[in-house]
Image (tube, rainbow over all chains, first blue to last red; front, side, top):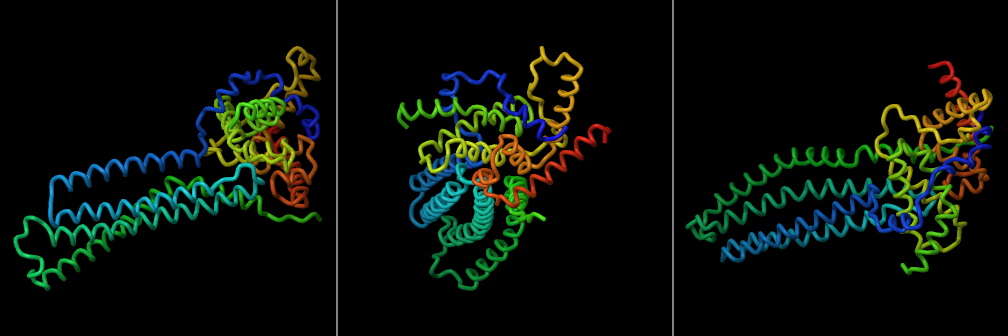
Length: 212
Length: 169
């Protein structure tokens, strides 16, 4: 059997199947896309909602129950929340740039691969770097404004503060290593297979062959 | 989008349903998969319909979206995937020995196609659709020269795959 013999019958493929009615087709237009990118957009939106609810509740709790220096924690959360919004916007932008289904297949897939790799890198590094920043900032605020501390922060021994800071930095550095690997593993688990598959397809499409 | 746009869209899709069905047959692994893919292609077509400016033929635009959706939406492949065989020959006509043999050979060819890569399947589909290499280039973005070489390779690969199947290897 040759491919050309199949060509003769190709027009009949699926022609005996009963297609969806006009109403069924119309109903399909209202459904949500299940494409990987649409799912990523939905997950990102859910993440945004979760973070917003969590942050608003936590910040409100601090403002209602504490005063003075401890409010710095609430302000720190607000700053992190704003940074998160910038992070969300950048991720959303990358996702929007990730597909052009009406473009040539090769350019669409190449773009998808390029942007997805950028997205994953961004996701991994921001996730990793955020950890030591938050860790050290929280430590410093607790050290300076903890209500249990009776000593005035100005009169606190400088030596103690430097030792505390050094310990915090060392801890943050040591803990950032497993966080980096954990992030890397998680990102690979989420997108690794899809990236590998896209790479393979794009490589195959980029193969430049010449007729002999 | 307006009601008129929706009606225009549904009419165009109805006229070109064959393209979507064939893509689903080539890329869907089972009936459920084909239904999901069909649905996804319709959704993607509808989402992009507003930006269709008519620079390319509607069918070219549709092939691009259908193939882009099928290729980039594929989940991890099961180890051995054999596409379900569409009915080419009406059952009442498949009685004669000759027709049965023909159908058997077609099944072999179809099973061989299912073992091709995603890109090769797209090339085969466009070849079966009788598209010129220039049209294929417009849809896939691969140069027509490379497509010719790839097509020859695919034919060779299919020949050896069908032979291997016939000998049970």
